[in-house]
Length: 137
Image (cartoon, rainbow, N blue to C red; front, top):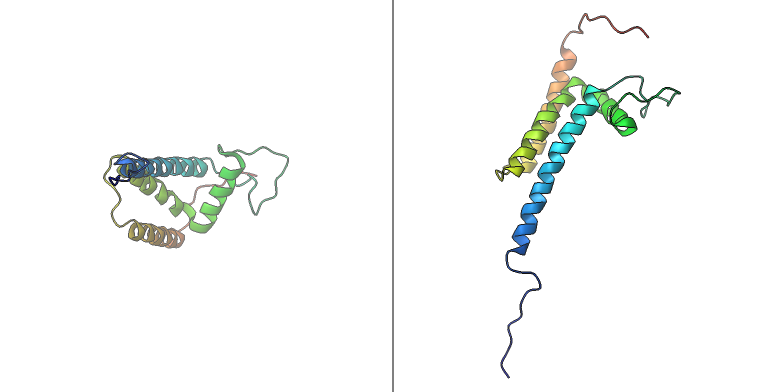
């Protein structure tokens, strides 16, 4: 009897194809996350319901509804305006992945982003408050 070679179920190169599509999907997800974060921050309204604000009878002004209001409230309460620094970074990482350029040392980059956001929050907290009048209640 002649021995038969076992063949793979999937064609050769299928694993590489799936890996490339997964990287593309991650790139699109990063761009979508950057756009969603930008929308939530731009349409933030302090009167919107969130984790520390009770839901009143009024509507939600955030374009991404309740999840957007909560995300914007959390981002602005934890990082302040420095939260906006994440928008271009996430978008740039997504574009690099879609262009097949990759993000070198991703764990180092993520740690650097967290450090930058914290440093930006500290720097902006030390800045003097603006003299812009607040909106009447």
